[in-house]
Every structure is written in structure tokens, then in C-alpha cells.
Image (tube, rainbow, N blue to C red; front, top):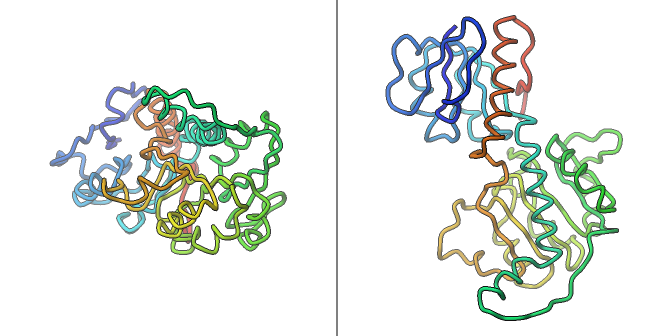
Length: 301
């Protein structure tokens, strides 16, 4: 069976019998592989669009990203879309905890002082006893919670679909004023776009920390900047809107903000590649064996 793989997976050992892979690096796809039933999409629309335009009848499109907002409208009719739920859990959870600790312990400010050779002790806080609100309770949020609990925090949970122990979106009005840390991990959909708006930030506890590890468009950037400028909240962001952030954008200079450039998922790390291939390999095995695939995106995303 012919399979198309992205360049990111070029060094993996394909140890499944009967699998013939072509590594897509851009450009023309060989004629024989345009009929490939199983395609692992490269990251981003710009890379995937010229590839999908050459495919004739793909049956499965497997992403290596947890979010699929960027690819939904590019999936050919009749093809099954599968996301990479679970692959990014460890690096994302570690990054979320890192952003919290860096902000609570004021590491960015100490780094700035070091660069200027300033000995500047600052008052610090402890994470113990803090209430952490996870908005978007999927596998990344679960992994983040597991790593936060040893710090002695209390976890509050909100998801698009409520279930035991996890409240629905209507609970945000009640929970936001209670939280010392708010972590946004929702997928980007028409319903969630701009969910962190002026009302959202106004409800947050004064001095609380806002973390965004989902998508930049979940946040009204101007509303966030206003809340930071007013000193109402602090923030640590791995994603922004627009992205990348232009040099002249005022968010760069917003007080109380720690920013990382969308690196939380760790896609360039060898460990990520091993996890990604483990998922792809299992999906290929299931596809050949005609077993149900994992992480199938169904209905309204």
C-alpha cells in the first residue's frame, strides 16, 4: 500500500510489511503516489494545499497537529480526517507548567535584570494553594493537570461538552473570578473564536495569570492588551493573533506579559517525532487490518 509522509518523518523506520512510503518535500508527487489512500499531512495550509491538489482519492488524512481548524476545509470529500490527539500532550503540558512557574516566580524580569547587570530582588508568590482553571479539558489539559497537582493547586475544569467533574461553558461566569490561573486550551471553532474577550478578562480576578496554549484567535488581542495595560491581569502566551506577531505590534510592549513563539508542541524535537510515528504506525496497521481508526474527527469540530 502506498503512503504519503511529510518530510518530518523522513528518518523513521517503516517496519510494516506491504507499506511503500513517499516522503513529500513539496513540488510534484510521483504519479504512482497520487492514488495513495493514506496521507499524513505536512504542517500548515501552505504546505498541505499543493499536496492535496494532486491527490485523486485519499481515504485517510492524518494530521500531526492536535488542532485541525487549519485543514478542515481542505479535506477532500469522502476522506476521513484524524487528528494527533495525545502526541503533543507531554511537551504542551510541560510548557504550560513552565509558563506558570516562570510568571509566578518572575523569571522573565530576573532575566531582564541580569542582562542589564542589575541586582534586583523582587517579591515572589507561591503556586501552592492557587486555583487553576482549565478552559478546554482535552488530553493536553489532563496532562497539564497531572503535572500541576503535585504543586498543591486546586483544579477547576470547563469544556465545550460538560461531564462529571467538568463544567460547561456557562460556568465561566462563575469560575473566572475564582481562578488565580486561567489556562486556555480550547480548539478553534466558530463558537470558540474570540471567547476570551473584554467580558472574559473583566471577570478574571485582579492580578490573575492568563495562559493561552490553544490558538491565538481564541483571544480578542485588543481586549487582552487593554487588560494588561490596566494592570488587571498578567499573561503568558504561546500563541497570539496575529501570528507571527509583527515587530511594531503593541503586544510586545504590554506590561506583565511573557511570550513564547508557538513552540509548546515541540514539533522539532526527536521525542515528538517518535510519538508522531507511533501514532501513524498504529493508524496504518489499523487501516490495513480494516480496524477502527483513532482520533477520527466527526461532526462539527
